[in-house]
Image (cartoon, rainbow, N blue to C red; front, side):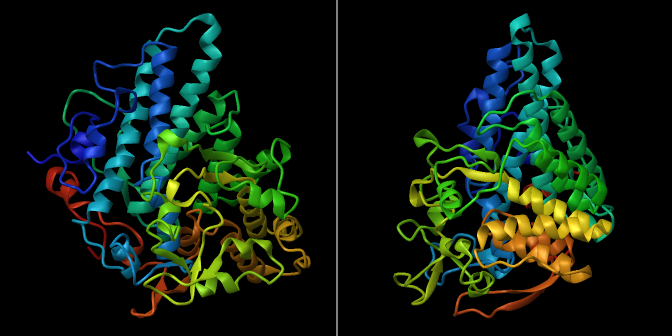
Length: 472
C-alpha cells in the first residue's frame, strides 16, 4: 500500500511517492526512533533531541521552505523568469494537492513531531545518574519545545489563521503518542486545539529547561515563541507579559549599530539571537538552502520586490541587505536579498528563528491593542531608531500605530519567514508582485493559495481526513 502520514505518524518505514522522500528513508537512528531504539539514558536522549534539530535543518523545514514561503506568498519576494522550476507554484498560486513539495513539508514536519513524541513518551522510563538529572531535564524540555514549534509551523502552513474564526477551522492532526506499533489515522484537530497543544508544549519547555546554549532552545527562546503564538491568537495580555519577561531579563540586547547587525548574519550568533539553527560543513545543504536559492552563484531564483526596498528609508542600513544588479539570463534590474544569507550557495548560514527585535515588536503590537500607546511607541522606537540613523520617534496613534508596527515588522524580519502570516492574521490585502512576464495580483488574506492543500497521499490513506482545504 502506498503509505503516507499514517506511517509518518508512526515514525516507521515509509514508501512515499514524493520528490524528496528518500531523505527520510536515509535518516540515522538518532533522527528516527524505532520501537527498538528507545530513549534509555542520557546518551540516547541527547542523540534523539539532536536528531530533531537535524530534522529542522531539512530543506522542507527551516533549511529552505519555512524562511522563504511566507516572503514569496506575501509582497517581499518573487521568482525570476530565469528559474530552475522551484517554488513557481507557490509564486503563481497554482498549488495542487499532488504537489511534491507540499507532501515533503507534511512528511518532514510529522517526522519531527513523532520523534519528539517518542522522546516525551519514553523519558519517564529512562535511567539517569544523579549527576545527569539537570541535563536530562533540559533535553526533555527541548523536546517539548521542539514539538510545540513544529505543530505551530504545521498549523500555519496547512490551516487558516486563528483569527479567521477564533480557531474553529480544521487544523492539522495531533499525534502525541509517538511510535506505538499500530497504524494510526488521526483526524484534523481544530486550529484552536492545535494552538492549545503548542501552548502546552512551550509552557512545559519553559518549566523544564534550565540552560542556554547557542543553537539550542532555551526557556527564554520558548517564552519568546510563546509570546508570538499568543500574538497570533490576539491574546494581547499574554503576548505582552511573555515578551516583557524576555526583554526585562537582560540576557539579550538589541544591536547598537550597523556593524553589529550585519556581523550577526552568516555563520554567527548575535546578541539578539534567542534561537538560531547552526549549520556546519557537515550540515551543508548547498544550493538547496535559503541562501542557495538567493545567491546568484547558486540557483538565484528568488528576488526581492521594489516594494520591499522602497519601505526602507535611504538612511536605514537594513536597506543594504538588498543588492541591485543584473540577473544573468534574467531581469536586467534585479534585487538580490543576499545580506541575511551571506554564505550563499554553501548553505552554511545560521537560520535565525527568534530574535529580540521580534520580541520588542510583539510587545509593541500587544501594547497598542491593550491601549498602552506610549509603551507601544517606545518599543517601536527602540527597534527602528537602532536601524535608521535619521529615524524620528513615532507619534502615531490608534490604527496608524498598529500599521507602523506591522511595517516595522516587515522591514526588520524580511526573509526570515513572517511576512504573509502577519498579513493574514491582520486580515490585510496586498499586491503579490511577480516577474515581468507575469501579472501582479491583488491578494486578500483569505486567498486559498496562501495555505497548503492537505497532501493527496494523506487524503487517500487516512479515512479520518475526507476533505481538503477550501479551494483545492
